[in-house]
Amino acid sequence: MSVETKTRKQAEGLIHKLSTKWRLRERIDYANRWALRHKGKTLGWTVGLLFSSLFVGLVLSICQTGETEQNPLTGIEKVKPMFDGLQSIQDRKTYQIRQMEGLAARGQLIKEELDSLVKLPEKSHEDSARIIIRYKQLETVVSELKNGN
Image (cartoon, rainbow, N blue to C red; front, side, top):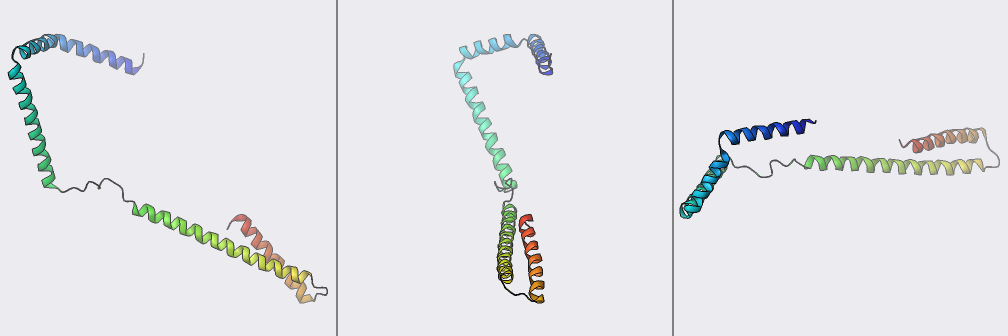
């Protein structure tokens, strides 16, 4: 037996005991018979209670509004910091894309220079050293592009 079922049975038992002890069924029947015999008084009492409830509600709402002027939007979280955060993320992403594009362009220039150095029919010692340096630079650029740094 689940806790919900046990609780429901206990509540039903308690309600049954209270209704039997206070004779609720008899009292409700008596009130209904009285209301049928005195329709004018029932209408007066019902309308009077509704108007007094309305009046009390208005007075309470006016009193509460008069004490503190509350902005209805105070419960809404400020969104400007969120938009600022999104903007900074977008700015960083744009910066990273520009850096990658610059790195790719640099790699392209190094490759073109390396190709032109390799195509030389006769290479000096300085040309060979430059080829090695440019090749290492090109390897570094390619590895950075692959890693996305």
